[in-house]
Length: 375
Figure 1 (cartoon, rainbow, N blue to C red):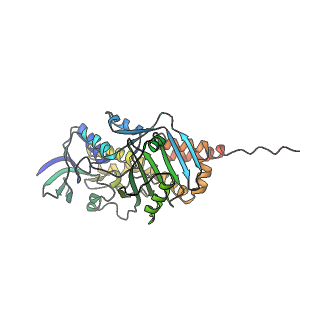
Figure 2 (tube, rainbow, N blue to C red):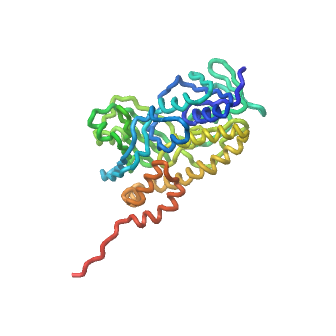
Figure 3 (spheres, one colour):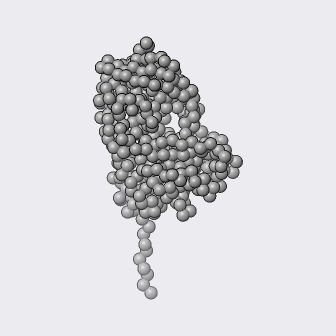
C-alpha cells in the first residue's frame, strides 16, 4: 500500500488547487479522478480574471474569450446593456481550465480511478479504487463534485438541497459569434428562481438554464423556446444536465481527517450559480489546513470567509428570484446599483459590501421627476 501526506479525490478546480499548494509545500500528494483526463465538464465557464492571480502561472493558454459587455434581458424583451471596462471576466472550457491547474501541481495523478471505498482511523485515511488498488494518506480532501461520495462516506452534507442546470454547446455562424464576441447575456424573469445565459467561447456559444432555489421540470422546453427567440437553435445538440449544490447554511466541512472542498462542500453561489472561484479558494484553504494539521480549523475558516459571503448571497437570491420584476426595475435598470452588481460579477466586491451600499445606490439611482411647471 502506497502512503501519501494527502489524497485528493477529484481533479476539478478545488482538487487541482489543493494538490498544487500541497505540492508546492513539498508534500506527497495523490490525485484520484474517476474520469479520463482532460474530461468534459458542463459549465458556463465564466471566471473573474482576479481568480487567476491566486496562482503564479499564466492562464492565457486556456482563455477562450474576454468579456467587455453584459446584456441583461427581461422576459418581456426589455434590455439593459452595460460595459465592463478592462475585460475583467474570462470564458474558459472546463476540460482545459481544470487540467491546466492540475498540470502545474507536483502530484501523482491517476485518472480513470474511481474511489469505491473509504475508511479512516485516528492516523489517516485509506481508499480503495475500482481496480482494487488501495492507498493511504494522512489526510483526504474530497473534491469530487456535487454528488460527492466522499461526503456521503464521511457522514457529511446530510440533508443537502440541489439546484439544477441544463447546458448546450451550440456551434455558431460568424454573425452570432460576432454578436456575442465579447458579450455575455443573462435572460432574467424566466424560469422561476433562476435565469438563462449565453456565454461566448472561441468557436461556439455555451447556452444554458439554471434554477437555484428550486427545480423546474420544464427546463428543456424553456431553454429551447427562449434560445429560439434569440435566433439560437439548440435542437439536435447534446444537452448536459447537472446538479448545483447551492450554499444554504453553515455546516461541517470536515470529519476526522476528511475535508470537503468546492462543490463537494456545497460552496456554490446562491444568486449566480457560480462555483469556480469558491472551489479554488476552498481548495487552497483545505491544503493549508492539512499543512497546519488543523482540519477543524478548515471548517471555521471557510464559514468565516466564503460562507459568510455566500450567506449574504443567499439573502440577495431570495429577494431577486422571488421579486424578479421589482429587482429588474429597481436594480438592473438603476445605473448605480447595476455598477455595483457588475463589480460583484467581476470579483471586485462581495455580497456583504454590496448590501451595505445598495440602499443608497438604489435611492440615488432612481430617475428623478422634474417638478411640474405652472401654466
